[in-house]
Image (cartoon, rainbow, N blue to C red):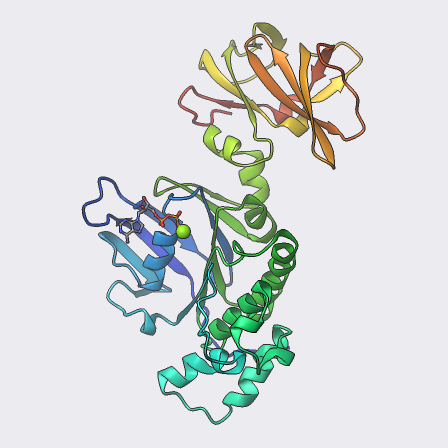
Length: 357
Ligand code: ADP
Ligand code: MG
């Protein structure tokens, strides 16, 4: 196992904002976020939500418009990127095409003018950690995408950073390679024992890799929680519809505290929520189709085959509800079916999308 001698570092962002010149709104807006020592934090959000900007602020590649960034207790605002002791890995690998794999990995040490006495051994150890020992003499052009990304990981590791920053490092790889490298990066995190901050728009990456996910939209952090928590108990309906495939069903309903009227059908449902008008959220995989009397009745509109499962689109009044069922279930169109679910799987939001209970 490859051990590094490093200082462990938490990262605290205090009310950080970034507005680019001539922009009408903040790319990053009043972000308060603490990333713990050794944590694997994933910043997840749609394209343009401010993920890269936030990461670049942490790296020191952008200057914040306001707010403070701390590594441990140390204020970093005026510390140069080089002195921040972070390594960053990008989507496009950014390798030097004319250098061999060996030279690419060795580059940060050579460029920094550090002692190169044991550099050869160091590069070999890192290459072995990443299973690319046999590629050291090749140039990037003679490598697959996955191999190139391993090289850029190697180049990031050799700097012995305190913090590892990754910006969509797997987005240029095909699906099976992505799955393989997801696991590799998790292993690397364990071995290196340092703080990882990983940016992605891909919910599968976020769910599988994160200790905690920070959900970002329009430059604002909406929720920071463990993957299970953020998936099961989103604090906003928008998160329910951003996560999950298909996303959470959201239905405008009337709440009395003892009942809900969902798509003109009244069901018993006890809640302490006071609002009369609510949005009911329920995930497609939490709804059951039953031959007994269900709590809701609808008609089958269409069926989508997903391979490992099927989605039944069920018409309830003006709504189309998605229900996820086993892939061998058969329901013909226009068939009237009964739906059931557990009260525990119901989420209530206000009409602005804020979680109520
Ligand atoms: P993401 O990485 O989530 O796709 P970015 O952080 O790249 O989002 O961008 C957030 C917002 O900031 C976008 O509206 C983008 O157009 C804007 N932006 C990013 N970089 C710059 C820049 N250098 N100059 C001006 N606007 C920028
Ligand atoms: Mg980006």
